[in-house]
Length: 245
Image (cartoon, rainbow, N blue to C red; front, top):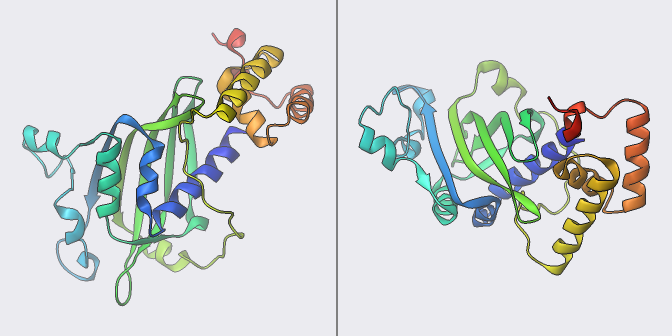
């Protein structure tokens, strides 16, 4: 359940990243979020085209030796991350190239790693780049938010370039910000429902929330799905705090 929900949210995040109003993304970050960019590009040749747009903010630790500069290149705060993302070159991501991994998923912390390619929009022959985003996500309010992100960019491999943008993704719904903290009355009702579902199912609150989200916040439908998956032994043990070592 977690993997599919995360993948959908990752697609929403990048759909917004490719849109004219990229500033909306800042709502997905915590107030004290940290962000850093690291790049590896050739200095000359066709692969070096348009890379100067990234050089000033490149925090590649093999190149940046000065500790003070390393510190300055870490973008801090929700608004700071929002401004930085807006300053980056215009992009078009190939959603079909995405590979999403969740190496850690607990109630208090989730780590999501996204790999894929994007086209750096330019006047002619836009270059294809490869990216890796490592997102550290924590609970906030009734939702969750990104508290740390490391973005790594390099040129796409020959094989990646051949495959890029060859498949068409399914029609997307209106993109929604990823993991925005909500304080509305509706959000409070959902939070109460998640707590109730957690008590009834025995699952950790985070996974109870995911189950309800997947079932359109229909408590009975979510309960039926939970009962079925549990009977089929398809719910990981770590979803239940009493089963954790």
